[in-house]
Length: 59
Image (cartoon, rainbow, N blue to C red):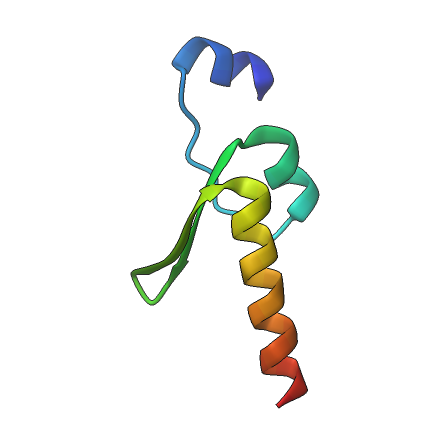
């Protein structure tokens, strides 16, 4: 996948695998129902997503 990204210059990846996302992406977008809930550096987006999931689970 790294070789493909190097040649293409872009990768659109939809995944629930944190490891796969972190290894292959610098920028992330969190979508829910077609709405952008967060966008930016992948670690920041993942943290926002994980915080939301934890808060939802606590309710």
